[in-house]
Length: 441
Image 1 (cartoon, rainbow, N blue to C red):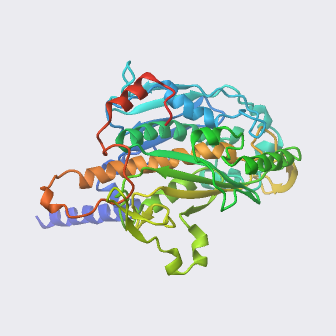
Image 2: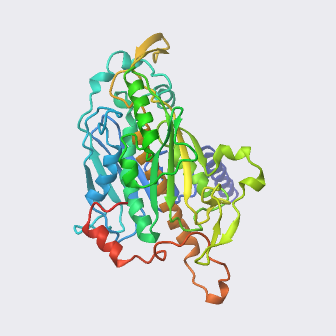
Image 3: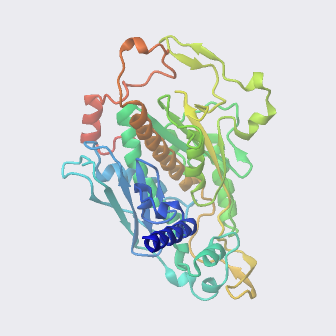
């Protein structure tokens, strides 16, 4: 018996040592440990996993946690992908991809989600891998992911940059179309992103302009302020002709966001939004509401004072909080900004080194955006929509499980009045989305 006890203790000690090496998750299997792969999935309940490389057979996404019976058609998803498609104007990469999406699973023949994983695929058609032969195969592009992928994995997909290419975002934008449909069905929430700034050219703070899909798409720079848009286009054209690149800022506004989304302390809504947006290629900065500009104000000037509107709802007189207070949405528009650096691969000669550490000069080849901003706007839109959809399902799972008598509810409703009661889908909206595949999301 004593020998058996000693053997059992030795086995336990070995197991504990292994757990400390592998992590506690090695002994406690949970759903969170079953993942597509490290760093390829996003979300908790509304969860996506993207796959594919820039010059592989194709790229795509699996969307898990999508509620059943939602209208979802191929044209609804295609409409969003067309916004980020390459070759759409002279301001973007000339790579000629139609980016036609195939919905492989999770949707019924009559266009309704089944509640099972939605699988979507876009096949690559116009890759030119020969552009990455020779010097490009061994020399690291400055500020690109080439060197860090080699350092981490010891191998990398050279042609097109593999997973570090912005082509990976096709899966995100496709999934974002599903998230947008969910948000609109639930409460009429809309998400719009546009180019706020290119280099030193920015929409004036005092400018009045409409933030709508029509106004944004009317500009090839995706800037809804016409005067600023023309200046941006001229600057990008100027840089493009020199073989160089520039960056800027995308602003995203989500309207009709219900109060209550976000979970303190580590899953605050702005923290989740920051991770979502900073995971995009070339993203280098993130702000919500007043952002870094808020440091110039005093508390008295910065605070959003409350009042009761004509509908009897608690509102804020200003929105320097960007629709989020204490990590939780307050029912005002959610406003975020994402800074994007200039495209790394440029057509000018630069100093670098090879994989073997030999100093060389490199002039980038391949087809790349002189400014990522026009195509980054729909990417930001998608990531904000995905974050809000996931936060919405998490909120419903925790706070909508139990219904208490009316006398328990003494809290005045917070935030703007929504287009329709949350969760109560109007028949007219269902009909519009089912019959018109071009319905704006």
